[in-house]
Image 1 (cartoon, rainbow, N blue to C red):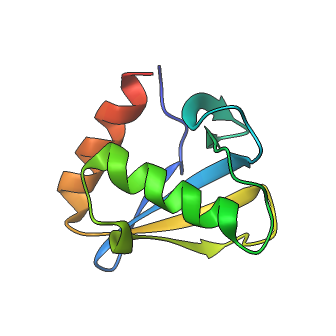
Image 2 (cartoon, rainbow, N blue to C red):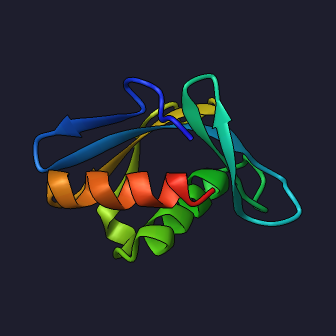
Length: 103
């Protein structure tokens, strides 16, 4: 799979990742790409930030990081979100590319 331009962006002290959320799914999973974003499904409803926390946890676990390393920085009430992943830019970029390529 060829990753779209701008899906992963380097930032100060980490990387940004575009996400298209699908709350209320039967199970948490990576569902490929949607409009130049990573489509992530989670079981939790989009209510009181539960889906956002589930997405943060799902991405952290997939990349082998602490939950506190991943946070939603924009799109808190939208399906289109931007995550910030704290850590070494090169290492995180490689991990993300490997994870997304494995889909």
